[in-house]
Amino acid sequence: MVEALRRQPALLYLLLAGYFVLQVVARLSLPRSLELDEGQQLFLAQWFAVGYDTQPPFYNWLQYAVVSLTGASVASLSVLKNGLLFLSYLLYGLTANRLLQNRDLAIIATLGLLTIPQVSFEAQRDLTHTVAVIFAACLFLYGFTRTLKTPSLIGYALTGAAIGIGLISKYNFALLPAAALLATMMEAEFRRRLFDWRMLATIAITLLIVTPHGLWFLQHMDVATGRTLGKLHIEENAGLLATRAEGLLSLALALVGFCALTLALFAVIFGRGLREALRAENIWTRLIGRMMVIILIALACMILFTGATHIKDRWLAPFFLVLPLYLCLKIEASGRPTLEGALKRTLGISAVIAVLVIGVLTLRVPFDSWTDDDYEKVNVPYGPAVTKILSEGPHQPTIIAANDMQMAGNIRLHESGIPVTVPGYQSFEPSYPWDREHPILLIWKRDGEETPLPQNLAAWLAAKSPAAKTVTGHVTLPYHYGDGDDFFTFGYVWAYPPEQ
Image (cartoon, rainbow, N blue to C red):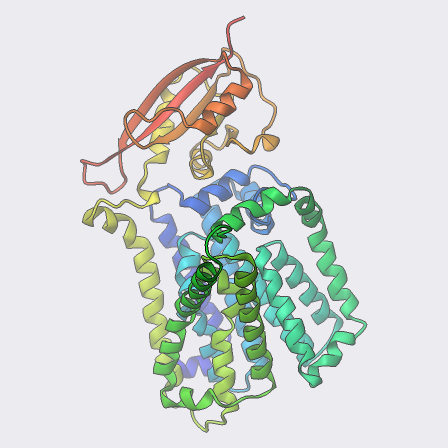
């Protein structure tokens, strides 16, 4: 395999394409229930909008397009995710081939993405917008380095497209081009690229992509930022030193969680050569190293000025996924005369990671239920529950309301012909009749036998009519892969307009 990859570099991308096809097959082998982000995507894929909620809309737009073409299904979710991840590896590989003269190192850098858990595992398990920003970061690295090395109008335009896509994928992506700009200004050989007239193409394309959502963002800033600020756990009343220390510790732990496995495995691949190479540098290692340092300083300043105390390692993905490429550039800059066995060891490690990722993602669903009754979201019998509730109803509902987007997405997966809504998303609701032959159906996940109608659903129904006539019930069904003694309960309400 080593010699085949050296003779035919494109073989690497065929192998990666096969890997992601296997990921799709593995996802389709699981029960037809959706993870959290999957449910959100399928729910929001009912509409095309310039803005939805706390997340930028790029991934939603792609999912809307795929669902419109293929229908609401697990396949439409999995194919999009794995297609974007494959393109990310492809762009990363093209960047590595452009910057590295040694073909072995270019292959090692590309496969190095598998050593980052947040890219190889977490992105597959249940992430969507993070997948979009990984793709945007890889596209930016390709366009940015291409423009610096061999400037052209296409390169500047591609960089602008990458920045625009990144900004409407995740808001924190803005740090990456900002850090790249500052790092470029520090390198005399590259600085003149910033004052090229073709930079106007970069700016124009960025604005063209960002403006529609940007205008929505300015008008809905509280909606767009509220949940994100909550995730940061900003402490306004706690002690100044305590919160800042907690935030910096959180950043340090996130950085370790993101980089540790890559550093450890590269130490296995290169041995003592890696330690020696860390002192070497060239123009590309200086540029990328400065970018990473600038981003770290920016994140630390954010913590010091805002009091954020909780930084998640996956938020670092667009900034530090360049690490494998950076390490390979260091190795090449060190002038090591040979890389004996490095590629072979990389292929072995990559194969093990690929098997482990697919195996864990597939087997966790039945295995968790066999061990400690800690069921996964995919174990929940959404489909059978929706089918049973609808079969027992006297009429087809005009609309189904769920108390959260995961529940709504699962409903749409199994009954795509009926509009689904969630309280808080009334602006997206279509017009619909509401009479004795067209009732409203409300469905929610019950925590216990006596769980009442959730407050958000009750308020949503009361806004329709405080005097609505309701028929309440529940459905209890066994988990997928359950042991026969464990059940999950759904509550439901058929709501009719008040009698005239």
